[in-house]
Length: 266
Image 1: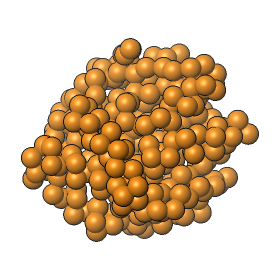
Image 2: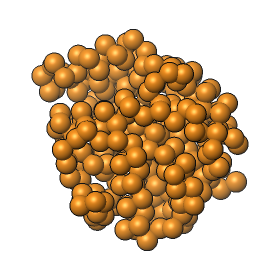
Image 3: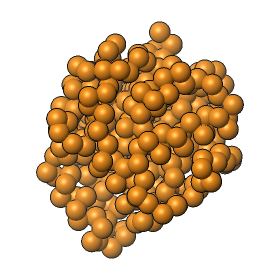
């Protein structure tokens, strides 16, 4: 059941699962708090998991865009404040990884440990750009009918391995997207935030111990960006999952849960 935080007049939906040390999940472009796959529930056995809808998606408000990562990070702080949480582990996926980095840089006192999944230090050089296959999918998406566009994006994000080996997962994520996809305006407002983010020069200032999780077959975030994150963030380490795509944490939640659990507890 949703509870609401307020950030500069914008209402943000969030909910909590489990007990223990707080763990804030931060979602990526166009996905809401229901779009992480099994990982939140698996970790709720050991942590107080907080999931929320960024502005522009789900049950949160959709104010006029464009948005910025700084703005989205301020929203995340508002969720922690509403939940009465002083410090939390933070797990960010894709655009949520940008937000998580901003939290760790601008609000270091609020972040215990950091998990960055399927993300980069930004969307401009020297970070590696989106692979051409992903560029093609993102360019086609706004021109297609809703159902065709969402299926294209699901298949692109899940990647060849997932489409080939887990056709039932394609349908599961596609159904989720049909039910929970944002308006085009909300999607574009979030996309602008992602496209203009650049923390490459700043991330050596991240003090939180950091785990980077990356699929080797990601066509949304070039996997080489994970190496850049690990090289530039002090006390960071990499878990590379070969062949998996951008939605690696959804596809491999059962495998990744004990890895994340051990990292956060160590």
